[in-house]
Length: 284
View 1 (tube, one colour):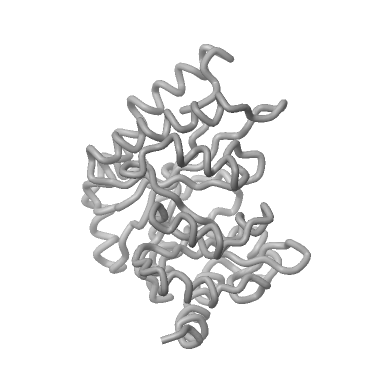
View 2 (cartoon, helix red, strand yellow):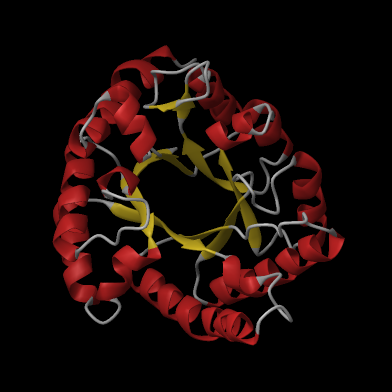
């Protein structure tokens, strides 16, 4: 297993794009905490699409691997026929943006394109919406494969179409397991009333990415080790199941606020929790 850290806490607001200097500072902090790699949003790496050597140099300096590039998938699914401009953006997303990201990912050794979304309609999702998500994922998954990158889908976000166990089961029936893998976010599973150990066990053959997060009894997100999720139990389960892929720590801004942490403190605490507690308390 390889441990990484998401750059989310280094964003002062949710949709803020890190400057190259801010991204490099985040990478250095992640490296100092002895993580193997990191995950980040597509907007943070887009300035390097034509300056790959600069990005590769900072990877070399920090000895980090780019584990995954995280993209939002609203433009590949249910909007056809709703608004022509949005449908055009969906086509652009598939034909221009995603290939550009994948070309960059392949060049810098990034293994995954992590896709989440889309949001369901106000009136709720139907079977056709789930089928549309599946078709989009199959297309993107095959495109990823052409570049030697894995497509991994993140379910269970709030208001997302694939937000329940039943819908995930249907999605998996409609997608090709050779091209569409899964990211299991343990906190998001708990938020949806799903046992993370159960969902990991059921879908271990399709799971290639884990998001490690924590929450308190009242549902407030906190840094890993500060909440109630049995992270040691999850780590032991992953070892038992022979999981050897990425485990990415995600500390969002609400978790930092709850724990009174700066981004650098947050990544340092996460690194210490893994090295001094999680690994030492795991079954051998």
